[in-house]
Length: 279
Image (cartoon, rainbow, N blue to C red; front, top):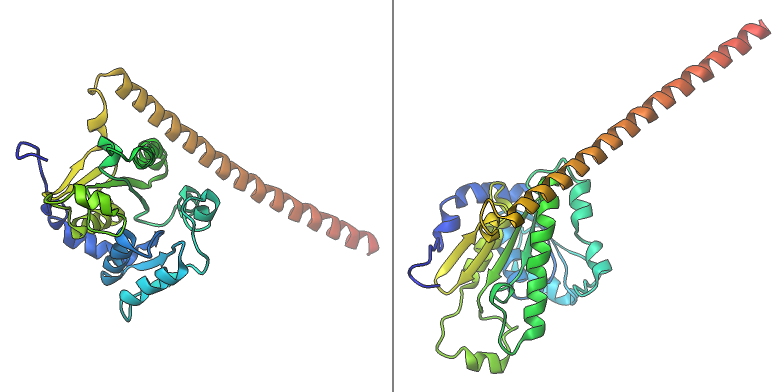
């Protein structure tokens, strides 16, 4: 980022962190890849603020180590089976849109996607990583509309290089002399994204200078552009579909109720008629 770029830095979440911290204890967080890096740091931070945290990792032992590092008194539960984040089925066992929808009465429902600056700019000599992170950004921007219809907040974290084990030795050489992003900023952005009910649809870019939250509609080609109009129509369609499905569920429950009531009355009528006949 240059000095001409609007930058929120740490104040992005410090300005309302008191409210966020107050909300964290009432929210249960489910975190995969919690055995190291951002997942571990976020687990420890969320638990520190009183959240109930459910974690998983491909290495169950690493997840258990994270739970230990969270300290005594921390409400951290380790999922007993290893979670392979390359397996869609394995992740669905722990968290997904389905489970958030099922808990529709719960407050503070949110999904936080972990992207990268490579989601936006690409990564030289790392086409597979860049493609994967572009995919995460595309997934976030697509399911955002479903989140609007279901009352689930969606945000994506896109950090610059942070000093974690994922940085390969050759990459470290290429980064020599360049400032890295702070893991505290990444965790702060994740905590805000997961806990603040008024923080939704943001691409949270984090570099060595701090944090910049880019609202969802900033990526549209103008408010009157045809892509923006398509997005509005899509959002309306998804919301309408959700309302129709909800109405269908209500009507189904009402029909079950009346069917049960009718069966009860009919059964009572036959019992009474049979008793009268015997008399």
